[in-house]
Length: 608
Image (cartoon, rainbow, N blue to C red; front, side, top):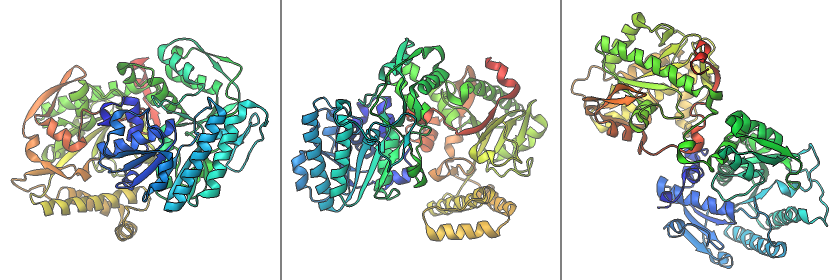
């Protein structure tokens, strides 16, 4: 399989982690024609990977010479290669994507001009003949010789000297867009900033500097005008959105979040992340034929970039690092990650002490359990801790902790914090803040650093009973979360969403919480329950698992201490995550929680 050949950086963009699953699922069973050079090759890898590893059954027809592809891609049952001339023989497809000359530079301009214009005509005519959606990738050079300080929107163009050979590629990009616009009917043009992609084969004027930072060596970085950058996964994201109709048949600029910057700003970003390893000296020069571009139009039309420029640069630096170095995430939470993990460990030890004292059974859960199994400690980029209990122990812990609260903490539940409506309980660290965008909006609750306590509840033994219990749990949880957060339900079903929104309007919040809690604990007193489910946690949609998984306890090392885990932890983690030994994509490690308020208070001395 292709996955076995790809490295971590390649897997990251092949996973397309910044594209929502429901959007990727709309590609299931589709046939996609792809043509172009480096970006096209990467896109083919991503689509084949989605078919083989994610079971999305996307068939890729690559039009052109695929000599530079891995054999694992070209030999895949989901991949077909045809010559450009043969696209006229394709009788059916759902989408045509041409990456054209995006991110490329000309080695022999007359030959490249002839090849690219011929390719554009053939592909555009094919898209029109098949009456399918087409996407053309262009880039910011199409705007010409941009003026210093100008950031260009979609309908603004700068002239370029026709006799200046440095701007031949700019002219080619304009010609290609004109060919496509004159031939294809349903066309979305995506003009990218300078495309960055770790291990993608794309080359930019930043490459030497990024490699030097990875190796801690000095390097000169040419600093001219401002440029716009975008990471490869955000390019793929826009392509998927274009196919699914979220983007219209028009032209969009595509950049990273805060993706327009000078080389001087980039040097500062890298220094903020890597410190003295980023020994960069600014010199005169730079890419004169690339322009800074705005991305307001695509953001307004529902496809905001998912990655920041800082994250894109980190990923590119990682492509020059070894495996052990890649696991280090120096910029997460502005350098506070180690402090957060030390705080979490200290209170995990306190909870362990309290549970042993009162004979309360618990297990490490979620990412904390994965960390114990896979890393003998925290997942290197994780910033929280999870434990899980059975209902009787969960309720007992809630009573005991009121009198046993570790110094400097507050136990948070709907009973102890009247403004809190989380489905599970938390132990908060006093004098700190740790809030996502969602939690930040609830200024009337404690938002200190949190230690999460989840409960696995009994459910029905019959399959139909389990389905009904799960459906009612999801419904009542939607009532609480949407009522509490003042938002409308939109689950893809107009009837279900309308009914749920009606209930959200008429039911008081506390009544909604009562319904949810009563639903989750409905089988609390059931004897001989053979199944449990994650009613209070993030994995409720996974359904149920065998209660016997929690029967026996063993101990695993975690940060030098021994903690309880289910003896059948492999079965439990497989239920929760699938292949739990598989590392999540690199770009998602750069911030597993989107924290907008963070203050570690007096604990800042831990790593000072």
